[in-house]
Amino acid sequence: MAFNIYDFTSFTEWIDQGLRSVMSPAWAVITELAIIGIVFLVFYALIGLILVYAERKICAFIQCRIGPNRVGPYGIFQTIADFIKLLMKELIHINKADKLLFNLAPFIVIIASFMALSAIPFAKGLHPVNLNIGIFFILAVSSMGVVGILLAGWSSNNKYSLIGAMRSGAQIVSYELSVGLSILTACVLIGSLQLSVIVESQADGWLIFKGHIPAVIAFVIYLIAATAETNRGPFDLAEAESELTAGFHTEYSGIKFAFFFLAEYMNMFLVAAIAATIFWGGWMPFHIGNWEGFNRVMDFIPPIIWFFGKTVVIILIMMWFKWTFPRLRIDQLLTLEWKYLLPINLINILLMALIVLLGWHF
Amino acid sequence: MTNESLILFFIVAVVLVGAALIFSSLAPPSSTNPQKSETYECGIPTKGTTWLQFNVGYYLFAILFLVFDVETVFIFPWAVVMKELGMVAFIEIVIFFFILILGLMYAWKKKALIWE
Image 1: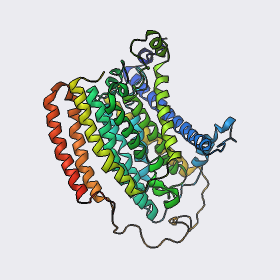
Image 2: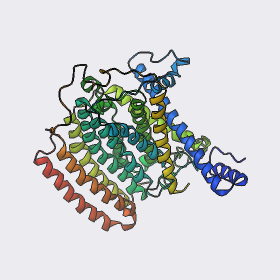
Image 3: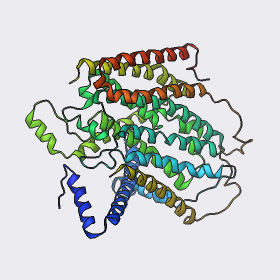
Image 4: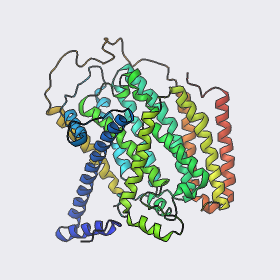
């Protein structure tokens, strides 16, 4: 038994050896894949349930309410009860809807968020797929989600859904640029797209500290653009309840609606995890120069706790956004992106390149 | 894990949605009702079809996005090798960005960045 909370490499190898000793190599691989699949399925569902509960509770506290408090202590089983309720609801078929596309939309939304999860480094040795173009892969896959939203809005044959989907299309398409460019700013400094390399290069300091002002600007732009990309917070035009009933998922009921909801929260987790990985050092502990004692204490905290701690902090900031700022109008939204974020971002990349060239970074 | 195992994540996601949809279409009690499968638009009977020609206010944004997204794809390899190539790469990207920003300024001047 070689379980070590600081490095999961030996643990996964131990499982691999164990399986190979009791069955043929082919079956061992199949069993491993099954284990990984089940673990990620449970993880995915668990994150969704926890985030929905957290959102409701935090929203309640910000609005001076108590929030869910009936099901279980402090209402912690509320979302599980909701999930079971949604699972047991009838799926309503809309007469005028395009049946195939209507049913295809939840698949695309879930696949996009689930596949992007596969490239996130959770801890040392706990990195499902270590692609050499990791961050590019995540950007590419997670932006497929908008296709699902557009399909949902179009196929519902509902005017509000269509308006919601079109707004969502314009919004995600615009903010995609800022997400990509602000991540590229970080990549200029690190010189790699592989997520494990990105994390390891931050061992002597997180990128947001290493990269001076451009890194801070890139982080702020990333946070704004990522909030817009997940259709959340002040940018939730696609499902503006007060104007469009529920936007693109008006016609969806029961478990299909639950999938859109789940995908939204998973996307929030994903963008927070990417921000934590790229700008805040992923599972790297917080180190200050040559304060030996302090660094030793920080090393004592397991990497997986560092990763989830950083992710949770960013998720909390995004939830805080949502319940603080009023919703933007669509023209304000596009003005913000095309006239402010994009030019700032382009200049920012040049600034970062200059800093890298002149060696002004730490 | 190898890169091929990405397909595993695809399969698991499809199974997750598919199994839940099948369960949900069999298990819950269902009743038919002509009004249930009507389009829901605030309770008033809906007028006409949604699939008609309408003004997509953002087609110019979509075109601009296409330009800038392709540009982002070009910057990705540049960002990776920027450190090694040094000053040459920097000057080249400055020229590249100059042309792009010129394009953005033109679109701005032509009032393409205004919704409707």
